[in-house]
Length: 296
Ligand SMILES: [Zn+2]
Image 1 (spheres, rainbow, N blue to C red):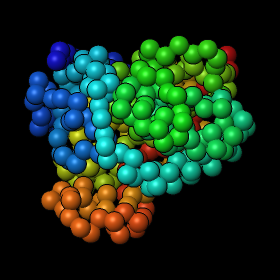
Image 2: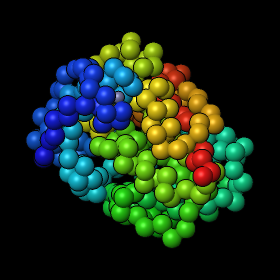
Image 3: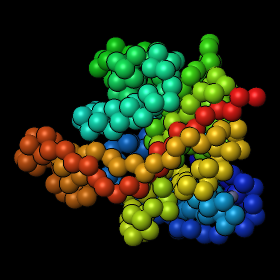
Image 4: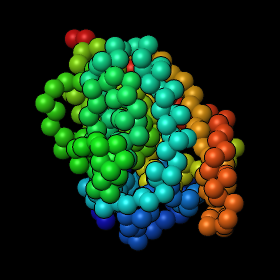
């Protein structure tokens, strides 16, 4: 894999960058399986730098975007749909908040749609939904589970036939090598006044600071991290006006949490009952942002 050493911040181009966390993985030894959404190897991470001017945290050297896209294209994640119920609860709350900002019949583009859980719920709520997903296996799950035909590829490869009233980027931004390029692309997909929804981990959250290198968002698939300040900066640079910023608490089953915190429990007989127990993880260590594309 090609790696590029950056001498300035890729977000604000400031030169005051410092080492944030030393990496624990060998980039040349990575394969598709390391990019699973349900990966439990927490603490595996790239070498990160942070920018003193804007607060952005980014892998440096930065991996090649095409190599990363290739990993996602070949990715299979058998465990992902096991947590559909918990994810569905999270997504229903997002749809409720979105419904206060746009008409429910709006056209909606979900970028990084995975197995289509959010898109399926959005369609149920009345949105005209389209999804983009690079993984062939997850796109096949979306077809099998919900009858959804997703566009197979990245946002950059997608050719929009119409502009959208809503674009959603739910736990996707932290996976891309060039957030500026992605935001420029997404901006071009939106109608003036259209709404962009972003959910992404908050590297300045209390949980991130307390857990340090063991924070559960440190994993190979995450190659950049925002905080409120850097995310606001990214959105402003791409002509978005922030409507609402919230802290996001994920719903998980007890089974999911335990097997991720204590990987040796995997495959033990307790599982069925634990999967039924849902709880809200009150870490509030993700940001949930609603922003409107400025009318020109
Ligand atoms: Zn910066």
